[in-house]
Length: 348
Length: 290
Image 1 (cartoon, each protein chain N blue to C red):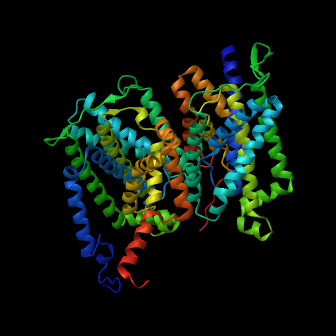
Image 2 (tube, each protein chain N blue to C red):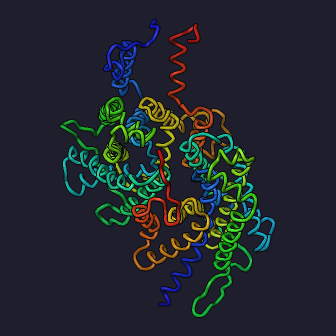
Image 3 (cartoon, rainbow over the protein chains, first blue to last red):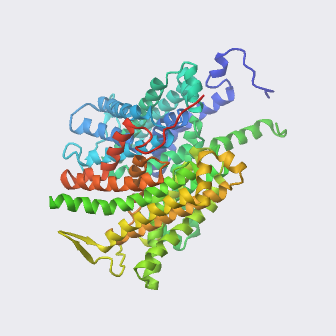
């Protein structure tokens, strides 16, 4: 048992992990995730796929809201842009899927810059409202785009084959999402521990102090928008491929709220929290409907007739409940459990 | 020309509703420093409750309007006591996100209880037409404008000349000093929520009378954001007046350009305004000192 955390070098302070146990558990988790398609049924597999691409999108929001402290209520706008950039690239412009996937990161990133520029002058709530306005403008622009954007009808997206791998089966698509998700997790973890991540956190906690230390406010805020929008755009493309149709109705405003709920429930500003939160929130409606089925009765009718509303109520209550009773979120609970496990029977 | 005047007049009527909601935003922001994202939803829930009560009781027009204000204020008090009071002293980000959660919950609860199909909110005499020159106006549209004028005048008196209004401004200016002077922040917050929600209830019910009762009434909150931003979050009267500007602008865009653009006209306008003046047209400029 270790008696404390002692570092001898500065590099020791920023390594991803120095504990062999953590490495072993992560390896085990990866093996299980890779083997999952052979172990799970169709329903569980598609649920897991949803969780994977949700994690990618939520990590985008984590960079912006969690690291840089810029509240965004319009992330569904970036999601939509990513999905449409991919769909338009494949169907209208005839690009290869690999290039379209790059487009789905580049187009939102560019728009992220456009939204980011006013953010340099706006504080807190004004910024939240600007992003909200942005997502409404994106959906209005798509609806007004005529045949090119599919307007109200949407665009059908076929399952592509990427770098020679055919993604038409659910298993192949799951593995593809797993790779993207693992990449996104690695990218955000490394962002957080590099000087870039520290600069963002410094700006979030006290922008004036950070600027006197030589952090370039404009550059870092814009970069945060850029990276966040790119990650979210990729998630949008994955979501579009999964649903096999991209339409404005497929990206309701509720998704912005869902993403916020995930990072709050998981614990603001942490990658682990984003992953835990995504697993929890995406599974919440399923868990709830299972519970209702156990209880039976009239509640079951409500579940079937207004599933969307029940889902929103659950998200709302999750946000309120966690902020009210445990603002540290699931990550805090996880830390408590780990602490108790390591030090038991001592308290600390 | 006639078309133009008609657009302006109906824009003023809908703008007055935005103005009422926007004043609610500003009242809460001024007293507590947060934005209540559930404002539109409070209006929607009050409108539905008022409709349910008014149709069973068969109240007249004046009583229906008063009922809407009272129900809205009660709803605000309940939300404040149960959800916002325990969050006093938490970081602004958390408190604002709680109101976002509240908004989602209220919105869905209304749809679960009353269903998604539209209802007609019948009030005796509301649809009568008053002719002024060439332009016909419904009584309800005139009533909305009257309500906004009354609300602006009432708040001007309340904030500037009543003891409690001064206390509210004191809390907004410097919470710590205000508490040392014996002002109860909790009570200020309760009154702010009650009055903002009362305004939202009034706006929601009037909107439902004119345009019908559907689960999209909450979009009133989204439409009123541009008005509050334009007026500056800390300017109650400015928000009320900006509502009229947004309403007219939106109607003109819808009338002359396209109806898709109409929905985002307000948002586009504030994007431009915020680029030039990041604190709104009438907002107080924040000076940062180190």
